[in-house]
Length: 132
Image (cartoon, rainbow, N blue to C red; front, top):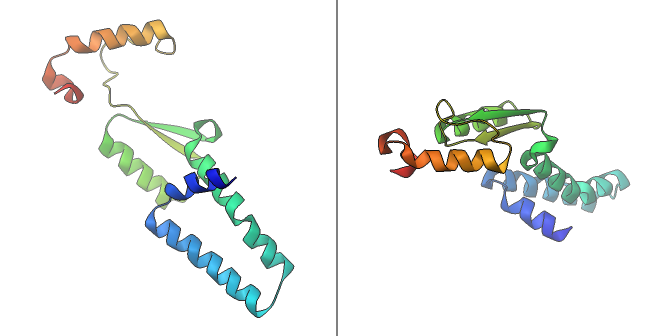
């Protein structure tokens, strides 16, 4: 569990980490003043809750919806908007590929992925910024 917790903590933003730390310290202070079994249980559940939240954020199979973006700016904006809306069962996928052109047949299979990979170098450099 400690490895999962460490991985989870590494993915927290600075503000999220500060909020978690403040909540833990507040609960510890409350327990110091007056021991309460409910508060103690809540405090000991904090690591499991953090790990579960991380899994919901990163495991696409746990997502309620999957949003697809085709450039970094759109993906970042969408992630920010979803975070601001406090949606936790949403996932944003970034594809840096223009799917409006080129072979798309059987992209879920290795042969289809290979066909697309072989086609991409035939594009002009100005059409595919990732190759420039």
